[in-house]
Image 1 (cartoon, one colour):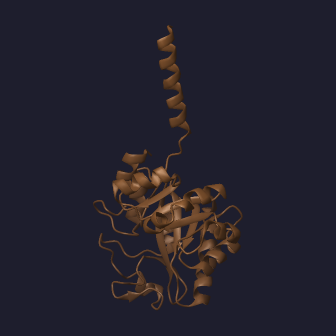
Image 2 (cartoon, rainbow, N blue to C red):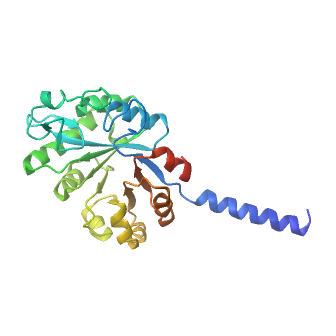
Image 3 (spheres, helix red, strand yellow):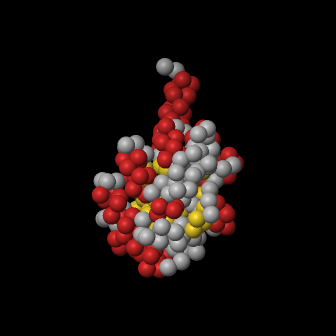
Length: 256
């Protein structure tokens, strides 16, 4: 091999090594993969669809009903039913846009247990009653444990109190992230969180938090990123995860 060929081969190997060492951002389907035929936000179908396209994880939202049953839905009031004030039977009587009934957390987790390649990101909504919220944390952690999903489930919340509850009550090694955007990486580290899970707008205001988080051993997720240019920006900043309503677009940009 001549000198020119050797130089070219060395350059190729260097580029390949750099590409191999570059972390690939992981795709989290926001409320499942719902922007596809037959699906709906926070439906069991959306959970299955997120798995079918190879998402790293599927995010979903949890409320505690008036009779202390966790149910899966994003809005505080949906289909005319207030999740925190209505009994579970009334919550689960609501029909989702794809024809499914609004699921209980138990039904949702039972379906998730059959999808071993998909990680779960459980968002507990901020509840009006603090004691009710604390009970919701306890029930979520217990239900995850009962189904053997501890190693596959992350917890996220806008409530600082619920974040601390999850850190205290979830099994050792559980990953808890904070959503509200009003704590610095150092404050999250001191609280025992695994990282920050902040909006795109927050991270654009504080791009220095990417580096600060990494220096502290924290992970960074950015939500809800649906534009290709914004996805690319997050990747360039070093995001570990991106939560999106467009999981296949993100995968085409970042690779699965």
